[in-house]
Amino acid sequence: MKAIILAGGQSERFGRPKAFATVQGEMFYQRLIRTLEATNMFREVLISTNAQLAERFKDIRVVVDEKQHRNKGPLAGIYSVMQQDDEDLYFVVSVDTPIITQKAVSQLYQFLVANLIESQLDIAGFASNGYPIPTIAFYHRNVQSTIKTVLASDDLSMKHVYQQVSSAWLDVDDIESVGQWYRNINYPQDLVMLEAEYVK
Image (tube, rainbow, N blue to C red; front, side, top):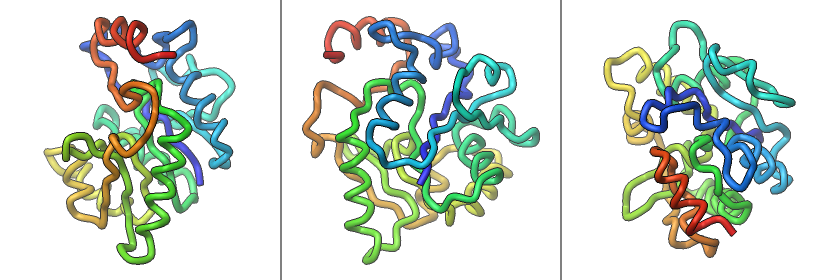
């Protein structure tokens, strides 16, 4: 089992690459690496990004989106890793979710295992207020062909993948953890609020 940090977005609303923004003095991507490695669940943690940012990541394996799928969002990142790798199961997390907790990751895995035999899950992720969060989820290699089909379409929404495969979602409120650990940082003011309210 491996973990993929999705860090290839344009970050237009944020104004600069989110991966290298800092929270409590630590870059987002470095904080995520530390959290994921501390779970002792993954054989490897890697970065999925674009060619422009690839060289800025230090001391970690980086996978660049395949040429034909550049600028096609998170699905391109997941697919590119699966094309270059042979793992069966991946945990996927967006780099703009820097305060995800070890507890959240491990409990989601337990949820996956508990539902795997009965539901033969391809995707197990979190949901908030009934809405899936596909950028914090486990993905089985079985989804690769579905992702390929969606990448060839005009609509790259991740829902076109998880609606076509077996998926289940764990409510974020089921995780006893500090603050809104699943919160996305989209704007600079989001980071200000994060620093003030949620990081302990």
